[in-house]
Amino acid sequence: MAHRILLIALLLALRAAPAAAQAECPSRLFVSGYWSTVHVYDACTGAFLRELDSRDRIQGAQAVRLGPDGFLYVISEETSTIHKYRNDTLAYAGEFTRTGPTGPTGLAFDAAGNAFVGGYRTQDVRRYGRDGALSATVVAPRAAGLGGPDNGLVFGPDGNLYVPGYDSHSVVRWDPRTGQASVAVAARTAGIRNTRGLLPARDGQHLFITAEGSGQLLRWNLASGAVSLLRGSLSRPTGIDYAPDGNLLVVSGEAVVKLDPATGETLSTVVNVGAGGLSGPVFVAVIAKASAPVVDAAQVGSQFWVVGDGRMQGRVVEVGTLWSASGAEFGPGLRFQDLALRRWGSARIEFLSCTRARFSWNSTGADAAGFGTGAWEIERYFTNEATARCDAQGIDAADASWVNGQWWGGEARAGEGLFLHRRADGAVFLAWFTHRPSAATPGADATHAGTQYWVVGDAVMNGRRLELAGVLSATGTSFGAGLSFAQLRLERWGSVSIEFTGCASARFAWDSTGPDSAGFGSGAYDAQRYFDDENAARCRAQGIDAADRSWVNGQWWGGEARAGEGWFIDRRADGTAFFAWFTHRPRGMP
Image 1 (cartoon, rainbow, N blue to C red):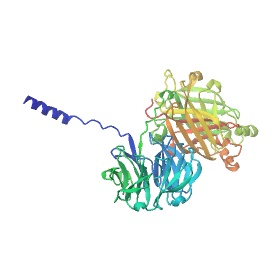
Image 2: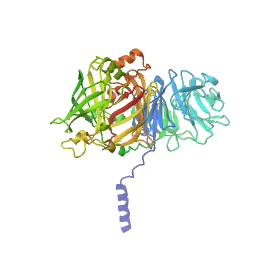
Image 3: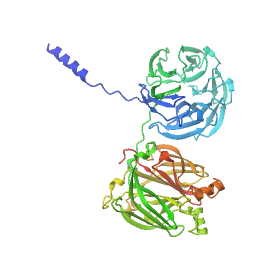
Image 4: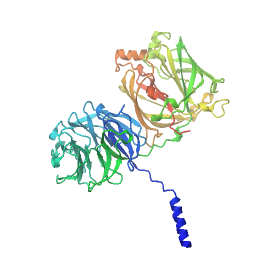
């Protein structure tokens, strides 16, 4: 009896014990909804996680592939664009390329990192380099009878590129060694209609084929050419990939089902009809997760900035309110509504010449941050064509665009700087890149020193591009009289590239990944000039490629969607450009 009581007690204890936590799935399932967007699911359970992006960017979603650089590549057929996303955070990382009106569908990468893209409208396959530049049309229009190359385009285990022909009901082979295209699976073999998905089998000898129009899942032997039916009566099957457990995931109708790769038997439904808003699924990809970047906490230190705007009256700019802006986070999570905007103090700048000024500031009083007061002379960091015009016309000429760019306190104040951007009507925006006050600063309100962060760099502008390979973080000193360049620790934060697409528009991208970086990740967005001015007007009149490029000077930002940060450029006449980006710390960094 005692043994029986002990057994019952043990069973009750086991029943009451919480189940062991299920291990996190190592992969995500990406499903392209042609009429919706790319949807992300747990690859093990099929649970909906999120949309990768909205239809504002992805329209007519097709192939999703992991590139050799670790980024996710997504085809937006309706806009003929291939976009990039981070595989760790799924943050948008910019455009890879725009293919023109080709109707891109399929995407595959070779060992060298080249991208091969099938064009449904142009009936061809084109090759793009790692930089997104078109290098060749490798499969000519309708070569080997190809019609409607579709999204299953893939390299096989034999090194050949295989292209499904949706309209030709066939598969075309392209041999990269000879550059020749040939018929791999002839039109309507085994009843195939509308060839869609291709997947190399794990035995290294076969390719799986989905035929949407005929509702088939087939297996093709590369050596013998034999095509066998694995499963019929599917509902317009399209995308196909391996699930983490080794079974097949296939789009059938509006759902994603799991099939046995040996028999074609349906095992389960992984993604139900309409789950997560999915509409018109055409492609599936199971991709292993990448680990999130590790931020180098040593590079998140003393940086602090304040911003404000005023009006230039004669030779004086009065900024009645400088604001501290804290509470947002770096990168795609930046949201203006998260910011706490608080009056920090005021500033005044009196220009003494085209290259010299007197700067003073006041952060005292009940409605200020309590950083104290101070004043010193400042000078232009760079001189350029705008300063030359000021010297020629006089400091009081109507065109005062020479104020745009960086000013600093010289070597004595190395480690901080002021950026100004003046609009043609006299409105002036000011950003002061400086540091947090020391703990011993009497009366300083430490709550103003929150998420602010900045990085700087310099490079020579090449044509319309500025490539800053060594953007630096500078941390370790303190605000005000205690500022000491000798205390600064300068470390490589990452790189920034800027391509100016117009006199007031640019494409901005950053990369803070790798062992020699701060680990902030990477991303990109379209940017625009914050203020229009005489320099921008001069650019429009002379053309963007004119020798005088003083129009790049001043503030640029990502528009309302990126409100809460901005970056400045100051370009010297010889093309050397200084860059400063005022932004925020990654989420969770003290």
